[in-house]
Length: 111
Image (cartoon, rainbow, N blue to C red; front, side, top):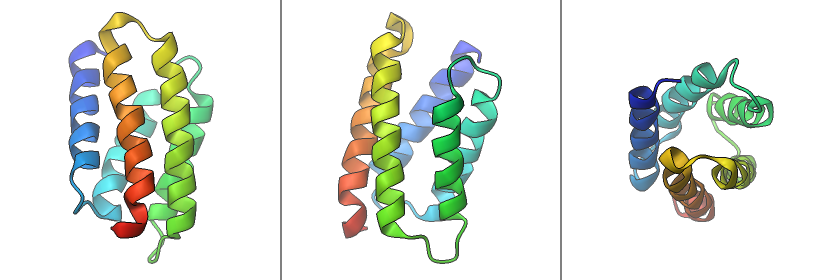
């Protein structure tokens, strides 16, 4: 994953999570990009699998908000673990992403 591309993906994801009007379809496009980006990346199997499950759930005509909330919580925890092992370049951004995923999972019932 090239640095400029990774930064763009982080920014896009953080912006999406900050926008409370985000619907399942907007999220699906970013999730698909992450799944594609993570393919072949070391130690990303669990994260990729969780992202794929979230993508599949959002593809449903009526996504199950409880399942989405659970998957977002899992992604938050997984991202937090990755952040603690990341180099300086991405650690802070990953921590922020983990926090926004957690906040979004809490707010999902209000969306």
